[in-house]
Image (cartoon, rainbow, N blue to C red):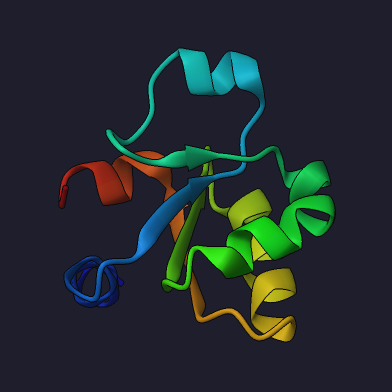
Length: 91
């Protein structure tokens, strides 16, 4: 899993945190973007406009898994990074 994260970071992937604002404020990956999971469909065009692969993260990996599946189904190269700390150690 971490090899995949490292590969994506090397490709210039955007880290997308889908947790709540309260969770985000408690700590997040430096330079990551924050869009709450429920708002992902509304922000799809913005995410596409980044023109980069995406690593979705959350607290446990469940919500980021949902986000990654949705984004992948909509043509965005996305992986589930799981808990945000998984990615933070590689940044």
